[in-house]
Image (cartoon, rainbow, N blue to C red; front, side, top):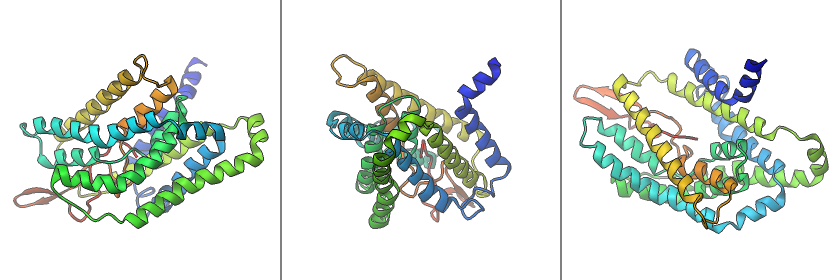
Length: 313
């Protein structure tokens, strides 16, 4: 019975391991263009479901209060789009002195310039009782802000620019984030009493959707035959990502838990997830670097500019 209780408590972590394992064994199911059609079910339906779920479960006054928490929003956006990329740039300058491949470093820098995540920060914040409303606002606002800021950061740190389909990304974010959230809030007004009586597992529902996103992402990764990355580089880049992630989470925790910081424990949770995780929405949907082998070495697959190391969706 103790083992069953433990499994039930840690079901999400176990679920992550299982979906990654299934993705490795049979990636064709969840690959782009496969039976699950992640380009539709994940990009549109799954993300929309997460924010509709949040709109349905959040009290309107909580959402309104979160919108007015300017100090939190400024901290998250400045940390994500200013401190994070600058700190990564300085760190990678040191790594450039080593033998690690330069394209791995460019991939890390690229992800460092991404905005806050759209879905994972909201789900993780909700799962541990954080300020979900603040996470929703910063995920949405940061993603819209990233449409403009991220290309400028890439030009600054990497000296390369790319065309961003502003209109299509803006409309996609609006339709999959803002509209479902508003619809969820409207529906809540009609079923508020019923929802409070039934106590539906909104957190578990969002977590299951996130597992689907993780599964399809890894299916896309494992199905690509062009990946040529030696084991040492792979282990090293995983270690670097974990070090950056944990260090920045610790930093945000220390800053937001200081006396007179103006942040509650729930705010701290939202800040930790929104500030230190990175989005893969600006056409950076893979989580590893794709390499193409040529006679004179390796170069980044220019036909797939979306292939960079990622921390979160």
